[in-house]
Amino acid sequence: MTRCFGDGDPLYERYHDTEWGVPVRGDTELFERLSLEAFQSGLAWITILRKRPAFREVFAGFDPAAVARFDHDDVARLLGETRIVRNRAKIEAVVANARAVLELHAQGRTLTDLVWAHAPTPPRPRPVRPEDVPASTPESADLARTLKAAGFRFVGPTTAYATMQACGLVDDHLPGCTTLSR
Image (cartoon, rainbow, N blue to C red; front, side, top):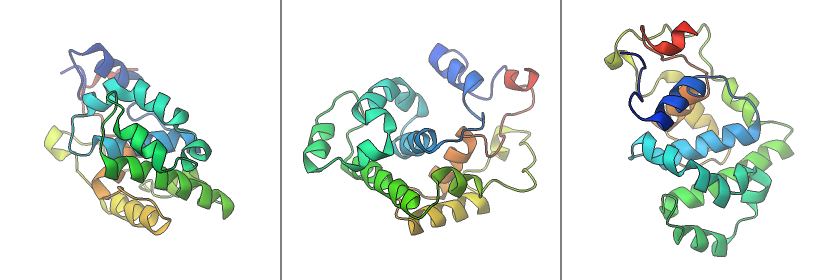
């Protein structure tokens, strides 16, 4: 094994080697990751990765202020956009989540602080085998509850955990992974 996942596809390899598990801070960046993880639900991550440039384009670079202004016409436009995953519930969730980010800001809070408050302390031990990687954890369940209480949608414990992995709150790289040798 050279990577935990992604060997054989240059796009997937680049994502694994340069992004997955690297700490992400910043509300726009976290909003994008959370949105993409929601779109991934029920699909292969490589599908979302291949569509990420189109997602970024049609969701205004995942700028929460811009996406929060999307209306019914924008949702209809996105449902007709063949370059992205066309799921009404997921599209509407991204718009609602952008509004929830702005509501956090109105309360003097940030998505960054909310998400990072759920990083395990002390950090969880790194998994040894693929079957040791959990689908969710108590921290991800708590993050999902906190996000839902703040008005976020499509953020269950599994999506929250995938976001935690992608954004470096947990380190699930397996022994022997090339990322560990950098």
